[in-house]
Image (cartoon, rainbow, N blue to C red):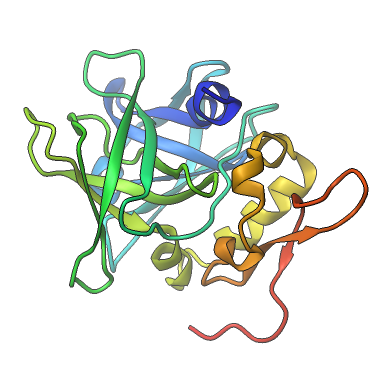
Length: 245
């Protein structure tokens, strides 16, 4: 198990509480911004974010998605040294997904799944199998082990008491929505300042074409060659040219 699975993904994941009651999971995309599910926070007051290393954090605002079950939580102050998820691609059929969330009565636990494909909904959702999605895991990040990037947010289960899997909203769909699109640039800037996640990407993941990690919002991870960095992802910036939504 590498640093992405053992340290960074659990570290960027946080429990979402409403009036002191655990209600779901979210994950940091900058030091003060998190993604979670709309149904976790919509209509709630007294929202707090609790991460395993830095305690409880006050929320200043929650932006609720209209097109899909996603919300953007904004904290009052940044959390120092918190790992930030790398937002990237969608997932191909057969890709392994790794997640970390906060099921009911759990201090946090991992889960693995296998991608079956995209649904016919608008926007499409990622359908995955071969793992149990428990209550409280809504809002968890879905890490594509093929690329080392978080490709979706977990939004629903196909069976609470079974290992049928569930559904996720792709990052590409989230970042193409008007009210969420600036998250792509914010996430890119966060990884320029803190490259722990990029440094943890494995050699197999690093050798993927750069456009495998391009997003609808124009954020792209580029690869360069050099004596010490052959095939290494070393820079995050913006894709050249206009971005159409």
